[in-house]
Image (cartoon, rainbow, N blue to C red; front, side, top):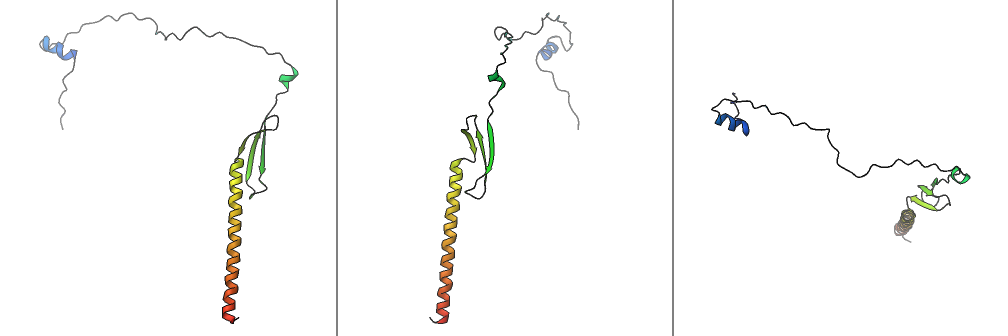
Length: 134
């Protein structure tokens, strides 16, 4: 496999055509450039140092609280509550709506299982009566 030379594109080709195939070198003197300039983003920020007086209020920083508990009403699901300094719930995971939905589903499944077991017991009694002839 052979690779043919690739003709130059642009000014070099035009120079070769006009000079009869002889390439001349024109040395350009680079224009002096200063240091690169950054875009102006406005005035420089002022450095401010603020000293806050140490008082008893700032030394006693109020902290939030995180409680991790097991839900006693459902199947012992873990509940995480984030409380503020006053004891008010900031966030609860899973939410109370999700816990309520889980409890409702659990009750419905228990009721359905109870109904199925009672129906199966009635069927067993009915089969015994028909086989005994009573």
